[in-house]
Length: 338
Image (cartoon, rainbow, N blue to C red; front, side, top):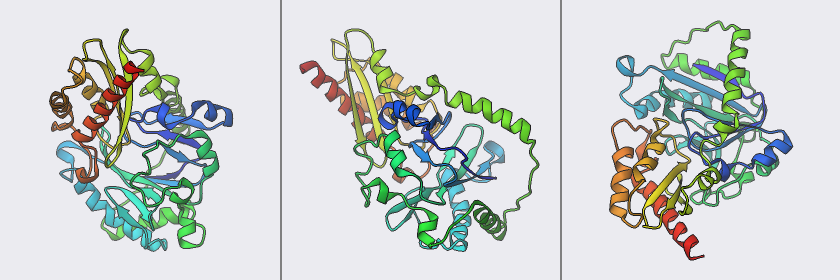
């Protein structure tokens, strides 16, 4: 188990997010906002203003040592712990919506996703302690047009809420931590403090920080990079589809009407981290107008037993990805006509 507060203002790009859709990198450099991309998991680009968001997580064994059969079972075990924490802090009106969002009167306070992060399963999340600088966020982030399609509150400044606003008094890290520890113990979870070599930890963090903030990592998923590297004599198109989560696709169509290259992206908590790359690979060579085969190719990867996401009722589906791909195919056709 770990808890903490982000110490530097930064944009945290989801592993599957299209950087060009979500972030204005030039504005980030101009305004001194650091950008990192999560290396293994998660969708959704988050803005963490220094000192404004508290983080927590329970990292859980996989395989024979796993105490829970799947991610939903793990979430079900820890959700009462966090609900008790909220009640202790005077945030009892906050509710879980969908598989992970923490909302108060339609406004987002935080989230607690469950994810397979390869080396372990993880249940944890973030909670806004105090209001972040949303004017700065709106200068450096790009909000996809369909992001708020299904939200009750459409304006970002109104959509984000903090614990201090909900309960009418400040909430600091120490109070949050103590409430969470108390809730763990009252729910039968023994917490034993561990000593940490801070010098060694700082050195390790610096190495990770350099890697996840590198240009190659940030542009791992990028529409502009995809378009620039598309095979010669192809038509390129992109499209978004907002189902339960935002999905994005890009395709390069050759002169025979087949998909010569593809990319998939989006706001989703799915594992393993190469799943969308594998889907894109399966689309190569398919007749772009053959919806049935496109769906079969997507499903061959995305519906396989090794692909995991919590709460499939609100997760991404094969049909969501197909809708994005077909939209990209249509955009490529329009590009040809233009």
